[in-house]
Amino acid sequence: MNLSQIKFGQQGTITQVSGDLLALKLFEMGVLPGEQVELENIAPFGDPIAVRVGEYKLCLRLEDAAHIEIEVNK
Image (cartoon, rainbow, N blue to C red):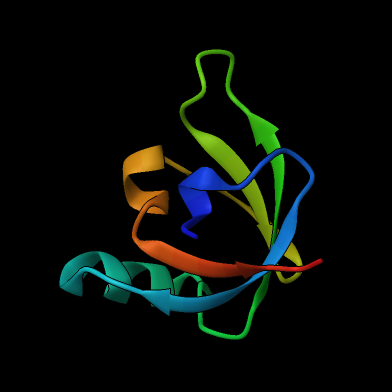
C-alpha cells in the first residue's frame, strides 16, 4: 500500500520510497524506511494530506505520497 491510500488515523511503517529526485528530497526531510507514519489531516478537497513522520508533521501532495510505500500497522 502507498501513503496516498492510507485512511484517516491509520498508522504504518515506511518500507520504500521511489522516484530518484523525490526520494532524495523526502530522505532529507526524514521520510526514511523504518519510520512510523500516521495520517493526521486531509485538506477539504482531499489534497494535500498531513502526516506525522516520527516526531514532526509533514504536508504532502497525493502525487508525492503515492511514491511512499508503507506497511499498515494492525
